[in-house]
Length: 309
Image (cartoon, rainbow, N blue to C red):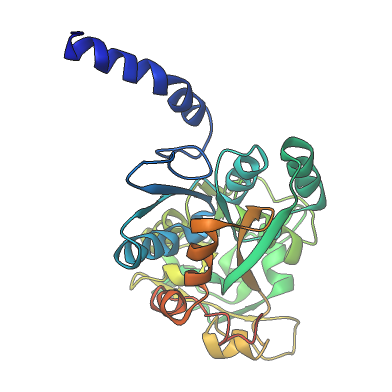
């Protein structure tokens, strides 16, 4: 009879290629796409991508475990770009993205896997503009944001916006908090605020949505942008107007639903082709009242509440 140690060594050698493959990419998990092998106790759904959505995705995964004990949803972040890349390479089941896939990304997925990505809108978000809670700034325009963040923008000091430097820690310089370039929030902000121009150099680029908001909360002279669901007591929303002379709005459910807030966007999940089996059941559950209640609980906007499909 072979020893237990030998049998364990054989098992490890059998699974090593899968583990090595998963470790080489941004999204990990317990099994390759498609779930568990026949006869296995659990089906594993690998779900990766947007940092804006990662807390929401973890909440879904935890609650779904109660509804479907035989399914384990493994969630990781890394940014929308990472999730989309890994989906296009066929190593995850679902990519979370706080932006739309580009035509080039869809073409790459089809080239790699022979399947076309399918989009599921699972909620709505607004990119909120955050300032320190003691900052007296109340509102900005999209043009002013471009002047703060965009290459060639002339707004560098709080006094240019009518803010007394003494109210922002005594330093007139605006501390710009941004996101890393693999973030869907970064891409969306560049497209819809900067007009696809480059960002101004010198921003504090944070890897996660929570990190960006926390830095603003620790820095009296900072301004930042992140998902609306990351607000804390240390920061405040800055109202935003589409143009000078137009009303400015906070990022709220009502303002997004009425299409008043200028930086509203969909929260998306992507699969390779039409989802099947447990992946399809999971996505259906996310779009059900039970899953959409979690969207609201996380501070985002359910699909039905925003009038979406």
